Length: 301
Image (cartoon, rainbow, N blue to C red; front, side):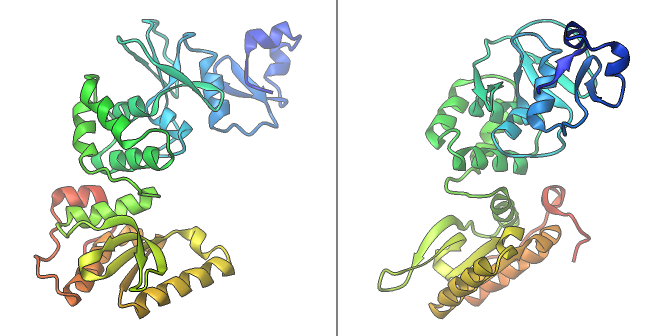
């Protein structure tokens, strides 16, 4: 049963006293659901829409969640409207927009499109998170690189200048936000940029592996292995075999685990040392104040 208002409850014969009892859960002031319902994203959005103007649509980080990427906290929920109606609700931010909103349906609720969502998120997110957002939207096929590029070129809404700067760092074929994070940590430390998700073949043309980040000139690959890689024996055996095949073919494989993410400086140094071993003669990594702001989650080495 979807969320409902107190007025709708009264029409259904549910008294205010019963509504305040253990059989129901209050989501917002005047909006409820049954107590056995554990509210998820859609439930919260449906509940909020009962309090908002008729044209309200999920936007910003809330729309991004509808497109499958969770960055930052669930609350506040973000919505956009063309009305000038003013009504504050705890846990809800209502953005009033002048230009006509192009609303689509996403998982059964009104939502702004992926390209608009990317630009809206640029008013909230930092540069690294923005690149993660764009690359997720591309990988999930919610939009395409030419479509997003064209939208950024023609629109003039709030956030577009920051979105354009972030888009210069966006690459296609990136398959996870953590791959984005590791790649940008390397790039912003002034190391060469690796190619994302490339197929590596041996001299006979046999496919050895599809690797997350590839340094072709140095035969070094960087692989992010999230928790799901260790979730089954079959997956672990597969990962071991592909790495052995790569190493047998002369590649150095740098594996980044979830436990490594709070220590990205160490990851950058590991990659640098591997590149140096293969002939890289560029400068050592540089960790400036902006790098620390974006990537430092632990004390410096």
